[in-house]
Length: 140
Figure 1 (cartoon, one colour):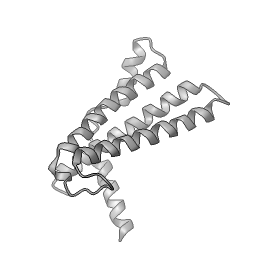
Figure 2: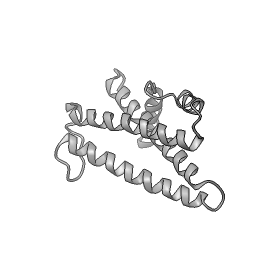
Figure 3: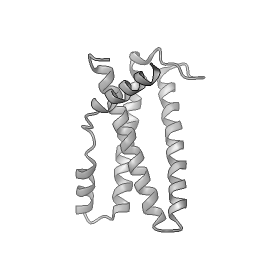
Figure 4: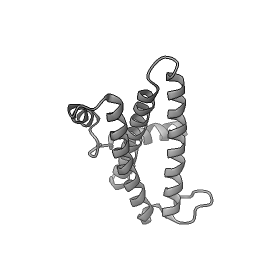
């Protein structure tokens, strides 16, 4: 039963992710047309997506819907989502450092790290948008 719930939850998560704030193909194309390298575009888009993620987490911190969301040692919603975001940032940075370290022996370490940051922030942005869509939908 638990597996069925998780399957349904993640199915809804992806079904309701409209991704209106990010169009990765278009965003990268626009950046590249300006003459920037892939590495620079990955980095700049990752930073832009991070700003969107931070704004979304800030909104979650203000939303009474999450009052019953429990997180160890966090009393207020702003604190819960600030900690959650900081944990995700730490994980992302360390994971992308690992990717860059691995790539250093076979390719461009900087581009690998920037591409990783881009992919991780894009994924997180999609997930935050999906949470918002599910929260606001009539089906959940």
